[in-house]
Length: 122
Image 1 (cartoon, one colour):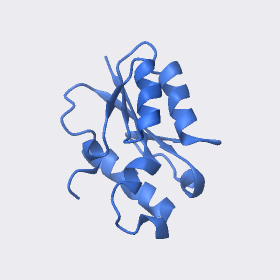
Image 2 (cartoon, one colour):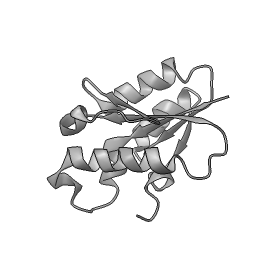
Image 3 (spheres, rainbow, N blue to C red):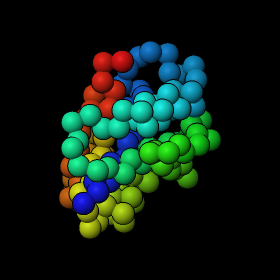
Image 4 (cartoon, rainbow, N blue to C red):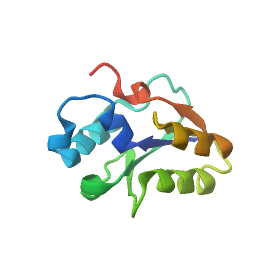
């Protein structure tokens, strides 16, 4: 069964102080491209990757292998909606360090992992 992997883009991007704040959209595009190229390290099962973006990153386009979901308001609320809807009948992994978001999606049965899961050492 394909695992739904939902990435909290703002949280993952913000986990490394590499100047992302100067170009939020560009930072989201770099994360999207890395996900498309490398996938989710250590996940042997097939995955469907959804990158949830908000704010200045809302214009980021999808690429093969990565669906981009622009949150109309709160990225956290959109992630919870995705877990409750699309992740309801299949394995679901949410990548974030946000404690409150982690609590909310775990209550819905999702697995949670931190930003290093997709940031790697690059």
